Length: 215
Image 1 (cartoon, rainbow, N blue to C red):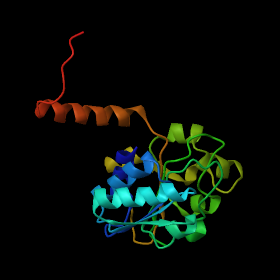
Image 2 (cartoon, rainbow, N blue to C red; image 1 turned 180 degrees about the vertical axis):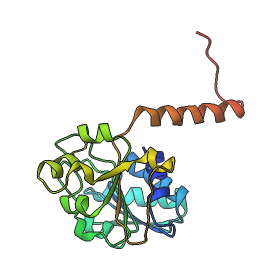
Image 3 (cartoon, one colour; image 1 turned 30 degrees about the vertical axis):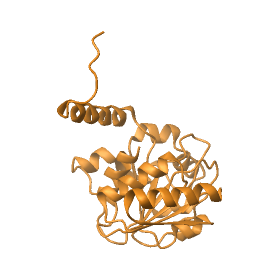
Image 4 (spheres, rainbow, N blue to C red; image 1 turned 60 degrees about the horizontal axis):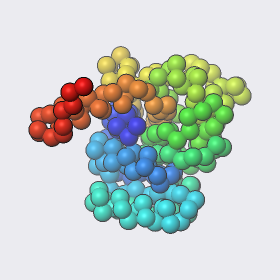
């Protein structure tokens, strides 16, 4: 999941993005932040979790791992405001992020909610954003972040700009100016897991690592 967001960020975030805001401090937040550092010159991350011990330990661990400044914050708004990239990776069922907090040019990765009745992002976030999904079919079946605003008449299906694969293949443009607010809404696809597993296998084989099983 982190790798998919890394690809999306490569095409959608401003090239000089250096500040990340994290909503959530679990394993998903960890791999998301690692991916951001792989594709952008990240210097600072602010992390919110409703549990103070979780956000504090996450900040300490990831600062040491990535060599960047990581600050725990007490409110979602503190994490989002003034961030170039925002990662929503929480277990929230109702919105914890307001589109009013987003400055022009922000890129958002929405990866926490993945059922039709749950969402992390409010309707204003969806309305303000150029939206890219990993799969249109999956998004229109499972993404409450999109389905609920569509059902409420805030946006329609055509508000979704396209799929990540279309950006990678050059069929559609990613970010086209510095002021666009962009959003990658990920539902997770089996092909992402397969592609990652293939790369791990190839690297392990080239390095002579692992054990071959003959069944």
